[in-house]
Image 1 (spheres, helix red, strand yellow):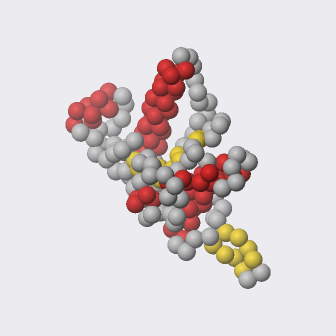
Image 2 (cartoon, helix red, strand yellow):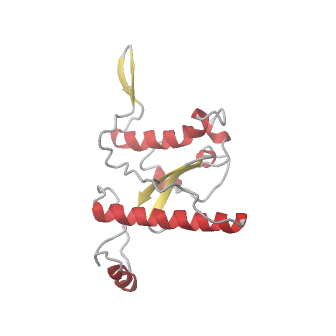
Image 3 (cartoon, one colour):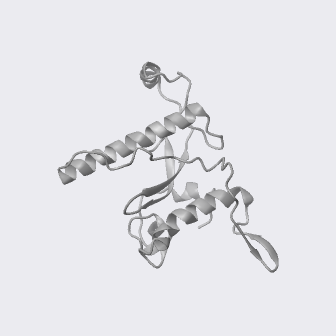
Length: 177
């Protein structure tokens, strides 16, 4: 997915997956822009931009990129299993987490007042998503601790595996681990 985005967290569950990515601002080469023009994209569109809200153009391109990734994965699995057909539902979706419209912030209330889970409010929602992704196998009753689930970046963040899929240095800017 590089250079178009950095993967911050991932988790493959038996019936779905989670992928937390940071979309990078990447200008396409002229040759690529000519190809994109024929596909109906404006020549100056990028494949996303850090710290910006996803507009209709950016949403379309990141969803298009995710679609390519899903089709590639499907083709590989189908070839490996000598089968054909879809692996993913047509309703596979991407949610933009830097503009969480209508999302309740991560907090809890104690006898001493409301406590926010993270010290930096700008990291609050990304941290909630990061935690949700890694807690998913625990909540599903598959393991007792996130780092026990083999199919997740939790092992990498716990220092139990030296995976190269996630970019921990970029993730540190947005989440605490």
